[in-house]
Amino acid sequence: MIKNKFPGRSLLLALSIALIISGGCAQQAVKQTQEQKPAPIVQPQIEQKAVDILKASSDRLSAARTMKFNAVVFYESPSRPGPPLIYATKSEVALQRPDKLRVITPGDGPATEFYYNGKTITAYSPAENLIAIADAPPTIDAALEEAFHSAAIYFPFTDLIVSDPYKDIADGLTLAFYIGQSQVIDGTITDMVAYETHGTFVQIWIGAKDKLPRMARAVYRNDPAQLRHGVMLSNWKLDAAIPASAFSSSKANKAKRIPFDRPDAIIPPGVNPMAEGAPAKTK
Image 1 (cartoon, rainbow, N blue to C red):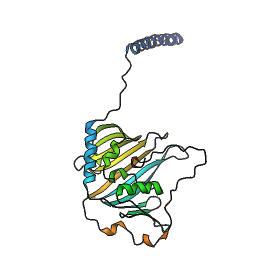
Image 2: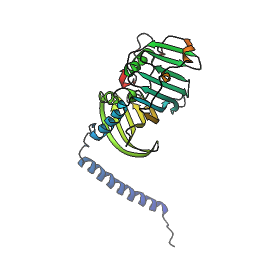
Image 3: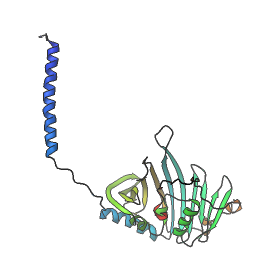
Image 4: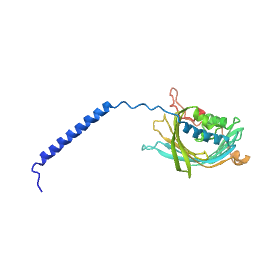
């Protein structure tokens, strides 16, 4: 074995060769970059396949005279350390078109009950034993909008229970594309579609056979934190008989009556609130 008598010189030689090689590679990379043309700007597109899937799901939902399903809603909220925390609620939903709706939300968080019977909307808080009742318009769509404006009541699955779900999407649709299929959501094959409407980017999983939505995930474009909101949907039952008693509560009617009011924070004079990602139906 021959020992190297000049280790420092060998190191310098190696560094010199490395610099020559890297310099040559850098010059070649610069040359290639200069020769390349600027990448074309990709314009947002609305793919027909994605639109067809959204329309088929909308048609299935709007054609149902009655509907029952469970919705587990999860959303991110900022934390003091920085990374967002995830909170969740569960709602048991029942409706009968055109004028009956019930949403029971046992938790997490304060339990709530919402009833609409075609004449009034009722919000009930079992833990506090408080109830608010107000006159309501004659359709589910109009009642949901009235509940939002009068008491800031909004359900993340509202766009699925209105009379024409696709219309609300199409009114502000700027992007839609088909992603592919999944076999892991709710134990069924789903078609994955992404779309953007009214400044909200949504990815949704829709049953390939039954056309029923199983999961959706949304991010508001104007949210600087890009917090994610999602809902998982299960136990779908369409056109099953629902008794009239399901849309009222004898226990709630005995609770202490309070007026409907928005829980919004009072905004100081001269301060312009930042636009919020309100639901498309209520913008």
